[in-house]
Image 1: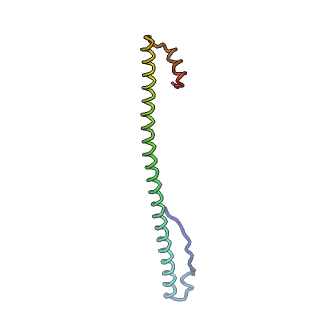
Image 2: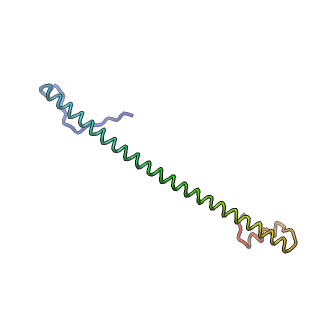
Image 3: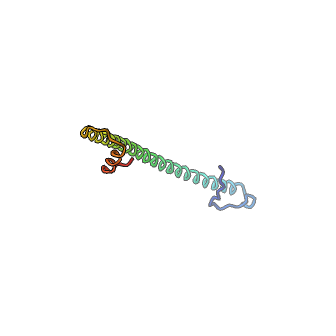
Length: 115
């Protein structure tokens, strides 16, 4: 991408400067201003890259924490589901009956379990 930038240096057409020494001096001033701009931009790019890297590291750290929490939540959900199955099995064994879907629904309602 090309960008046109106006440098803040006094400029006159070389023909009105009155000699090659003044023209060379003006060219040097322009070159110095260009170099200063390039150096400033490079520093700005380095700062932006550093900030982006820090943001990426923070995002990766958060993702790892979220993954750990998700794994923990999945384990808790599996344990809760097993507890429901165990409770239903215990109820069926203690009453010596097979639980009908209506009884299972009522037990789930009593235990506040969402299907």
